[in-house]
Image (tube, rainbow, N blue to C red):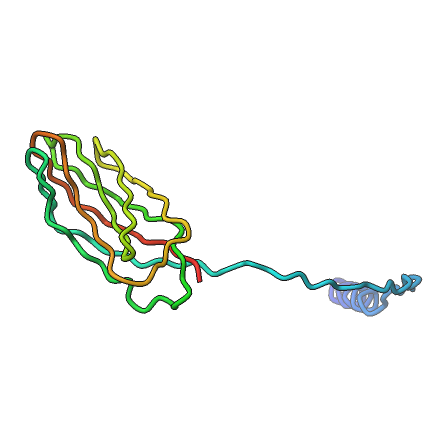
Length: 154
C-alpha cells in the first residue's frame, strides 16, 4: 500500500511540473523596410523530345538510310540548345560520322569510334519541324543505332 501511495504522489508531482511552463518575453526586433526590385528575367523553360533510329548502315562512304523525327507540338518560339545521341555501335564496325540535320537545313556531325553519348550544339536553331539523323563513313562497313534527345527552350 505504501508503494501505491508513493507512486501516486510521484505521478501527481510529475503532472504538476509538466503543467507549469516558464515564459520569457523577448524584445521585438524593429521592423525594417525592404524594397523589392523586379528584374526582367530571360529564364526560359527547358524540355526535350526524343526518338530512336533504326539500324543505320554505311558501306564505303555511302550514306545510311535517313531517320526522321518530328518535333511534335513544341511551342512556336522554341529554340534548340543541344542534341544528345546515345549511339550503339555494332561490333567490328568502322568509325563513322553521325550527322544530325535541323528542319532549317543546319547540319552538325561528330566522329564516332565507339558506343557512347555524343552531344552536338544547336544553340539558337528553331526547334519546330522534322529532324534527320544518318551516318556515313570513309571506308569499310559501319552499323549503329541511336537514341536521340533534342533539347530546347521556350
